[in-house]
Each structure stands twice: as C-alpha cells, then as structure tokens.
Length: 331
Image (tube, rainbow, N blue to C red; front, side, top):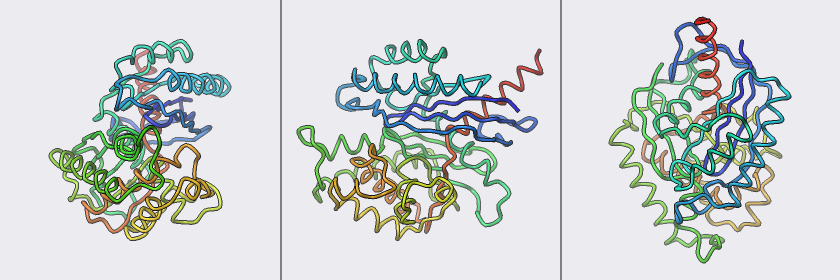
C-alpha cells in the first residue's frame, strides 16, 4: 500500500484525506477498485467561491482563509508521512480571473500545483470514490447515478462498473444562495416563495442541460455526495451530532427529503444553526443544497437516496495510489 494525501478544494470547503491505498491490477480512472485505509479526513469551510458568481474573481479574504487551511493541512500531511500528494481544485477556481494567485499560494504552502480540473474529471473522481464500496452489493440495482452537490456546481455521473456519461452544471448551494437568496449582502431569512420558485427554476434548467448528456432517468440507484446531502441525512436521522459512521450509506426517502427541505426553506438562521449536526458554515446555504437534492429526486423519480461519505477525495486517493504503483513498475 502507498500512503497518499488528497486535497479537494471546492467553492465552499477544502477537504483533506490521508490514507494507505492500494489498487487492483489494471484499475484506472472511474473503474478503480481496491483498498483504502483512512488515517485522517477533515473538512474546513473556507468559502473560496465567495462572490465569484458576481465578480468573477476570488476575494482576498477568501484566498487567505483557504491558505490558512492549506498551512494546517501541510502540517498534517507531514506528520503522517504521506509519500504522494495531489491537490484538486474545482468550480470556483475554474471560474476566477485571478486563479493564478490561488495557484501560486498553494504551491508555496504545499509544494504542489493545484490541478484545476474540468467538471467531467471531477465527476469521474467522484464516481470512483462513491461506488468502489458498492460493487458486489445485491440490494442496490445498477446503473448508479452519482450526484455530487457542491458549492458552485453539481456533477452527475451514470455508470455501472465504469462511467457511461458525466456532466457538470453550474448549480450549487453557494451559487444558488448568492444568486437568488441574497439581497444587499444579506441572506433572506427565510426566503420568499418567489425567491424559492426562481431558484427551483434555475435548478430545473440545469437538469435540462445535464440530461442532454447524462441519462438521469435510467439510473436504478441514486447515490448522493457532499455536505448538503450528508447534512440532510444527519437531520433525517435526528443525530445528536454529526456522525460519519451513521451517515455513510444511510438511505433517505424522497418524502423525508421533501419534508426537511420545506422546513429548511421556512426556517430562520437561528433555527437552522440550532440543529446539532449542522456545520456553522452550512447554515445559510443548506436550504439551497436541499432544494437541489429534492429537485434531482423529483426529476429522476427515485424513491430514496443512498448517502456516501466517500467521494471525490477517495477517488483522488485511488488515482494517486495507482500512479505510484505504475511508477514503481517503471523503476
């Protein structure tokens, strides 16, 4: 096994996974299988995408929050002695005019250049991480539809053993909140019916776009990734605190998702913040994230969602381990 580190920097959060990973012979890309022993996994809300949809630039304070998290992660990676590191950056840094400033900062701190990957690459990594543990299960029908609801974008991937089709669209919990629920710099608390309707129309339009590439309605099992989905699961289970073990592979019905989404969109900031499993950084954007999830479930007519804590980070880790094995063979 190879000790690897994977960093995923998105619009809302930056996450780290340090793990011992091994891949099977011939595994690659979205079809990767193997074993992964987690050593450290953590997430920091940095809101790198703050204002990007409006200004087209990464804000100085957002960059500093992100660099502070990178310095913390550098110490953890060194402590665990990871042999290889891969840093993947997604939606916000793809869109920003000043992304070179972001790239230089990460390189200075972590010694690697962030890979600003395409939406399709992001989707394939997510599929790998989400489905590696599901292969062989007889209670989950194929094909899978893996949905990764991020801060700035949502990735859709349909596949069996491997990816059949993938598409990234520009709807995410932060982007939808900033576009529809913020007035004069303040998040509506709670939003109006007109704001919710406009947000849902935007999401529906994005699903129309996704369906041009990905056969969403052919999926037999819906697998949901990232903080909006895992937070909805925690709320559905009424957890006294965020509990990854209980959230991972939990199954939440469409009706329960609808109930939670309705409450989140009617609630105030204080009511959402009082939820014991709620991360402070998600309080203002969880309503939009839940609505994206519900709209997807309605479009695909799926009765439930399987929630995965393993996602793009795990996919990146498998790929790093595979490249390490290939390097050893070439020596």
